[in-house]
Amino acid sequence: MFGRTLRECGGAEIAVVDPGRLNTDAGPDFFNSKIKVDGTEWAGNVEIHVKASDWIRHDHQNDPAYDSIILHVVGVSDRRIHRSDGSLIPQVEVTMPEGFFRTYSSLESDLYAIRCARQLPDISALTITDWLESLSVERIQNKAARVMEVFHNCGNDWQQTCFVILARALGFGLNGDPFEMLARSVPLRILHHHSDNPLQLQAILFGQAAMLDSSCHIFDEYYQLLCREYYFLARKYGLRPMRGALWKYARTRPQNFPHRRIAFLAKACENGFSLLSAILSAKDDEEKLREIFAWKLEGYWHSHFSFDVEAKASADTLSRSSVTLLIINVVAPLIYAYGARIGDPDLAEKALDLLSSLPPENNGIIRDWEQYGLRADDALRSQALLHLRKEYCDPRKCLFCRFGHSLLSKSANP
Image (tube, rainbow, N blue to C red; front, side):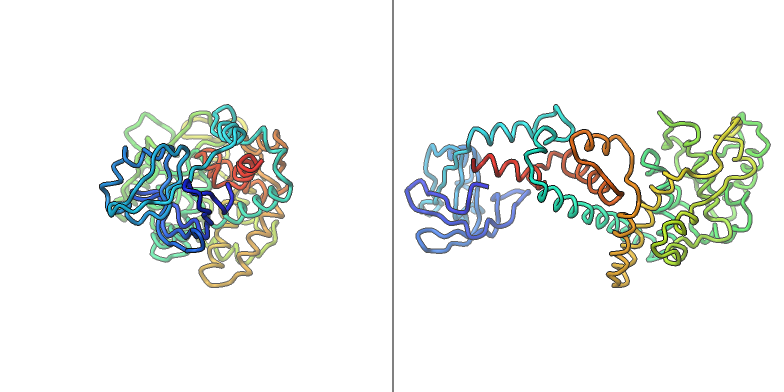
């Protein structure tokens, strides 16, 4: 940000050939840096302090790890520093413009969730477009990496992987973790064995979700039937339920209760679970992909949100927006990960094309960005904006964000 040419406190000109690698652990701040002093190139490490005297305060003079320092960068040069052999370490005092401090303080402020909200108009359209395109790819790559992590944990079984990814997505954020735990607690082969019996599928899933207890004062006939089925099947397969306290209901509308989501998951297992083959067969046809998730609740769940509580009216299918979220969070990452696994770059490209053909998500984060002038026209852009907020704004990684870096660079070189 402050240029590649610096002036050493003794007057010599220092050119930064390579800043090296930032070190976030113990030891010098930058490893494997290269600088050129009066035409001579040096390779080693760089240390940065607010004051040069901090070197002594941090006791670096007694640490052999700091004998490899080739440059000491400071905000205030209040003394010169020597290595343990007595040789003088080149030192640069960097003076930051007042505007830089104002910009930095603004980005560090908790006043706005989006750190650069008030300064977005100062960022070039090209920087915005390039960064959001990069973020959309970074987002799906992170999701694909998560898919591959599940894949390896599932013994390289693609269908079990798809089952876990789908279950987590049905948690729609709030109950993502317990849904994933539920899917991991049930070997898919057991569900395949009972795929022709909806009652037994539900018994296994609701039982593993710790939602079945025959000793509870629930006299619903269907509930008691599921309890009996689960008691038999759990003993047969040696199943152990998860902790029921993990499920969250706060600020959740009845139609989004985990009971109904589990009923949809059971529907997905009827007549065999083969999500990956269905996705690959549909290719990039959005309507065919939507048909995969066109499950319809029947019987008991047609008129219930949870056990023993009847509902006067409830949707029997997932809403179109919910199916869109499943395509974004399940289909696209699976296609991308599978393409990477088998070495087919065209599949990865199809995943990105699919996202660009879907409508954008509509949530508080996307509405915040729109309020400050960044609008999402499709799911690829909304995914980029979600990633920017969660991975850069929230953890205050403005220096690693091209928006923040651009603003700070401008203020560093007015």
